[in-house]
Structures are given as structure tokens and as C-alpha cells.
Amino acid sequence: MGFIRRLRVTQRAMESAMLGVSPRDLIRNVDIRRRTRVTDIAQRVAKLKWQWAGHILQRKYGCWGPKARRR
Image (cartoon, rainbow, N blue to C red):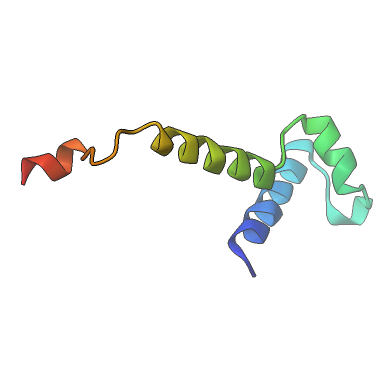
């Protein structure tokens, strides 16, 4: 199983536990997500990945972090 899939499964399990829903209730994941009003973890990870890339691109070329400068 991929990392993103594991995160999605875990998120769905937590949302179901928050609502007190069991798999026997046969409620769709979309309905559970609508009730909890939580964004999908895969979308959140993708958004943060692009934000980090933009943050890194704003650095000046050859700029070292503080830990690398100490050595």
C-alpha cells in the first residue's frame, strides 16, 4: 500500500470513530466527509508539497541553512 492510501484509510477510520459510525452502517465516505467537514488528506499533502516547493524557490542561489553554516 502506498503512503497516501494509508493516510486516507487512517483518516476515514478516525472520521468514522468521531461520528460513531461502524462499517455495518453502510454510510458512504463522501457522506462521512461531509458531516465532519474535514478536507481530504491527499489534497492537503499535495497543497503543502507545492507550498514547500514555492518556499524553496524563493531562496537565493547558494544560500545555506543555519545548521550547515555552523560547521
